[in-house]
Length: 246
Length: 104
Image: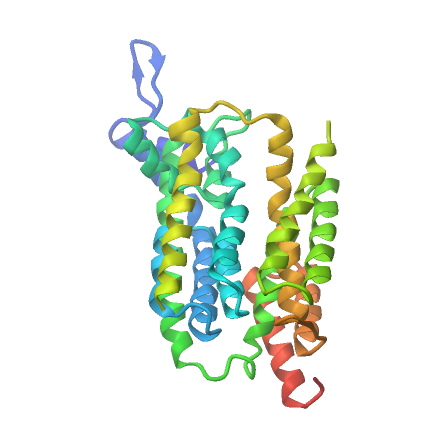
């Protein structure tokens, strides 16, 4: 919808969906960039507030600290993995457990990256840079149905969402350092609530529900016997039920 | 402190490599379908484990405390289709109030 609007607006002034020798050309990438950015604005508000929570929790829960949290938002740009690492470190888990949990959570970006691969133009370095702007939200905005993805919309949305995520994190760490005792403020209860909200969006199939229940059971069963963080890594084994399907 | 930076660096570089794997290395070739099935279930399995351990875990102990009240508030907020920030705030406020009145 937004792309149609953006093209129409551009066509009147310069050259949006221009017609050359009777053949309609695709609109220049800047129109798609702007369409993606505009579509992403409502999501950017949510992502920015999500970044604020990451900043607050990282700065106050004792696991990470302010500057590493901001650097992580700039370089990693993947909310659930960042929260996972922060919560494992806050619980006294080993660094290797935090790393493993974050990278396993981000493994979903391999198939997502494959789905957009043939729509990203340029040499290896450009495609590497563009791939960094792929997150769940920008991917959804760029999806045109039929497995087609609009590169400009992906990049426009990705840039807006990245700015919101990093900006939110900076606001969060500054605000978080001004807050008092995290437990008295109930911030330790914010982590499970947040993971639950992220989980709900992932429960779109019966195997997903099964993997979630099994993962939670594995984690609880192992908690008394292993260092913090290990039960979460072990819970990844629940994903192996995916092998049973066809 | 150095450890934290090592974690930040490895997760950052690792995530960049994961995101770029499809567009740069695989060039759109699909993964084997069995592998795709497993990868798709990693996020729900890990997120559910994180819900369980952050709600009930305290080091190596399982404890029921104010965080469970917070989680209950989060469930209600989610059922009301509240945005994520409201869900998180509801949990924090419920847990803080539970502690304030000395229930848990």
